[in-house]
Length: 477
Image 1 (tube, rainbow, N blue to C red):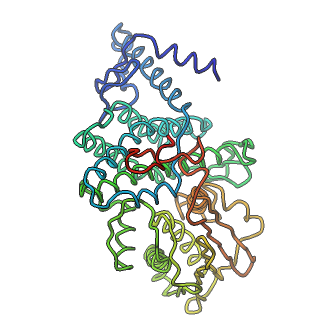
Image 2 (spheres, one colour; image 1 turned 180 degrees about the horizontal axis):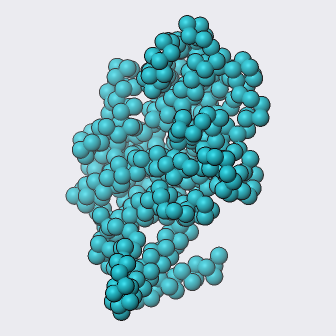
Image 3 (cartoon, rainbow, N blue to C red; image 1 turned 135 degrees about the vertical axis):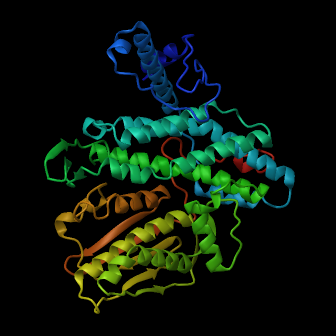
């Protein structure tokens, strides 16, 4: 590792200046980056151009540029990845937003500086993960290369931005990362599109839609298959990265009263807005964590969303289904509403779909959601949809595995991704399967959640480094 790092630094220390398409000079550092188009330009294919000295020079320059970009990505990806745990975020809400304008502005500026320092390594790690996917996932270009280019563009944009030292510079930086977050909104769908013509059999084999074998996976370091580990790590890092960006945007909206066009339509804000309206409270918050979320209200929102998604199927079969909530219905817990709503939606959709497929119209048994009173979040979703075949029990956690035909549940990532969301905060999803009858799905989160891995790898229990004048708890970094 030391030899590799030494080689990287030696190559980066060379004095050639790299100018990627878009005109950004890059040698040991990047000067500007917003709006850069990453990767070599497409070269003409005429014989005159191919044989010209100028064409050959441009091709060599583009190749060198891409090599230097990859070297910089590798170097950033090797950096230690600092973390924020849930208690840090909750503590943030206690030390800011008390009417002290100077401290509030300092908090926003410190948050922006933190992101400027720590986003490049996080983005670089996601690029390396995508690049490490085996050849069958990379061939023919397609969505994986598009996703990788998207992350490279964001990487260069953040790397080339100035460290915010004033509120004006913070506003410019924040607008850039908001646009980055918006541009990455469809990554999950893009991953699904990239795997449209392949699926995991659940046993390490990847086949096309006709069943033709494309790739046989190896067991990785976590006793799971390599591709599954890569996808899991990529999504963990992606979710953690989006958490940090959204945390900053919510902080500045709450403390400075500033937001960007379209920010109110972001999924995180929409979930917050709907939940707070149902709870009868203000939707303004300094953190992505709702410290006293009424679980029943969030479950009701997820039930409505699941029924809306399945409305066409329900109407086609002239069916209606009741989802009842029972148990400790008045429980309030500290959760990230966006994440829990994603998990609830996925499991409720699966439960309702299985129930419809199992029973005749007019005789659908209810889906039951039970809220526990454990110290953390404990929610059980029970259905009578026939359960899972015993041969499938371990396969349901694999990305792209599905018992349904191609084209149904197109991304085929829902349950595996839901587990990533829960494990990100120290929780889990477990299934009690009774084949021929139905399933009990148990969702658990510790509260307050102090995760050892909530932002994609690296140090444990690192504190959120706000201005030391705000609170001594933020002095660790």
